[in-house]
Length: 514
Image (cartoon, rainbow, N blue to C red; front, side, top):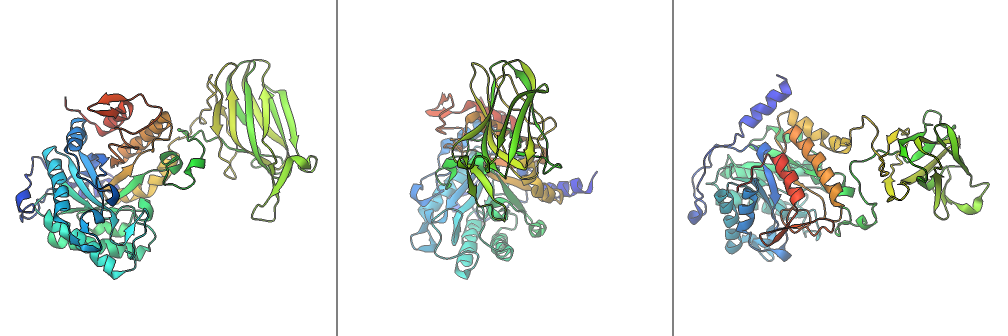
């Protein structure tokens, strides 16, 4: 057995899921018994975030039906991201409101009742929140904020000391960022120490730094402590047209899987990169292929051939046609050019073809952002291209409907694999990793969202990472998501996205209760 696997098993053995139930001692502040030594296995956690105390403006009681339905649908985990202002007095972050804390007690009790693990999280903590408004003090710099942060977690540790980690964990801070490595470690270590001084067996979850992106090897030695990442990569899919993300309304319509279409033709001046775009398919007479051109170095000549026969050729040269081009700054001594008005290279086939090649046969380079295939009588299929420098063109199959397929042998999940790489590495060293949030906003086309979600789920299943969708009810969830392109099922007074639910159940190994 490989050493990395042994390390993971050793740490996982300290987090073994305990059989049986633990009855919460609500009447006595959840009791004063020491916590059970039993620990959960976070690889088995699959569930949702519940947002009743996510912001002060919308703070309300949690809903028992959510816990009941999550369990009935075959899931076993909820994360409760909270704004500390929901349970403290205005202007005094060390004066806790008992009435609000009892609502958190209630949620934890429902978790035990329905066999759903509850993870408490400070989404807004004294001195920090990833979202506006900015806190008056800075958690990473101000001792007063750091003292308060540790005091909040000490309060929760005392209050819930009688509940084993099989049913309750603490996720210290949502998506830390805008800090230094030293301040990140200082704040988290202080909070962990404050918790474990009261309840040594409480499982603590620490979000990766830089918005959950980066794991921290220094935390490996701390137990019981685990680390959490995110599943929003790439954000152009997960947060397309999200109203809180500036500029997302201007992003191109997302697609998945990525086609890996190279959006640049290099000419003879760069022989190491010069290569044709080859499209293979059943192209009937009347098929139109359109490249929307966006930038030119100095000169380029595009040539299209079908089975070696010339079907179109056009030269683009700002010197020969200065009115069609405008100079744009390049950030270097080079001068680039953009079309003054929309400009396309078009190919219309007059005969059936099974292979079309487009290449730059003269000059330097020319760039395009979309390739449109218009089958005769069909719907135009638009594929976005990636103009990242230095990539050669590759052959692509094209479906009869005009959809461009990724090159043979391409791993469509490569962007996800790259994001997960440091998390897989730290898991190989023995760390337990969990995905505290993930999902796709409701403006992303539903088919794209489901395909992208399944790619993430496949990665996490291979890595043995549990996960929690943001959210259960709402714009990322399976209930009342408000997607315009979903045929919803009426379900207990809500609109259920059955396709998304079925996908999640398949990867959760869920067995819904009937």
